[in-house]
Image (cartoon, rainbow, N blue to C red; front, side):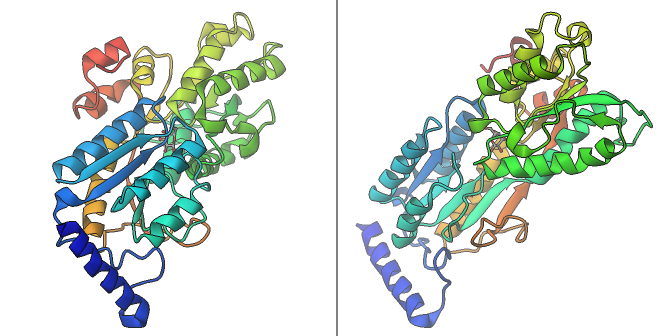
Length: 383
Ligand code: GAL
């Protein structure tokens, strides 16, 4: 009852805003002040892409826990990496009367009609980790510094090859080193940021002849792996080994933007049985992202070289802070208002920082912070 009353009052605020008494255009968070409503009466829809990757399961439950601890009701849904399913789940959240949506999109360009419906119902939208594109109705974006993640991925590759030292300084090592490049899913805005950060970092060394890409596949379209699928990455690596490395050409490193892909790539490399003498002698340097437990364990064993740790607990926490601000009618704090143009507008963003995981900093970075336990790292599975 209380909620309905306050929402009716909100309708009035909205009408006044439309009449020119203040507030912004579509997508503005003005008019969403629900500070006078019992939090327990407010429902927040949380739409996550998939449960096949452990990071999204962790994200979903951390966001849910944080919101519930703050007193909100939560409707958490996973879309099984299926675009129509995600659309339907968000439609249902809107029909159920959600007061705010937190969305990690599968395809960042496929949610315009849902976001139009949300705007029409005065429901603010927070884009979570991945930017929702082509819509005016994205109110805020919480994520990591995705370009820098790409820089870190390339840096870890260069460090593994011995081109950079532990301080990030050039060692003068001239190679030439043979590398292959992988990118994420092209419909995920992040994939382009990771790629750009990595390529900008690697290009000077390619230009100098320190690095070579023997397959010649240097466009993001050639390197991309749809839906970030491990099996697709494994298949592409197998194809590259057959097409380019069958004659004994040495492969020194692989730029991989996500641990799931890295494990697919490693499986392909381990399965080569004789395809290239150096591959059999020792695996190339393989990078990653997300510090998934399977990969952290492989890093600990010296099989995968590096990953990127993005503390998703902090991302979840930040999304709760932003949700609360919006619902209470406060302007959420942004620390970047330039970078994330979604094709229609620049979305105010809060960016978190990431760290490179190497074998020798698993302890301080991941175990001391409670992200994984030593037992989990040893077993290679989450408890
Ligand atoms: C990206 C995300 C990465 C990784 C990848 C595959 O959008 O930023 O951290 O999780 O998806 O799930």
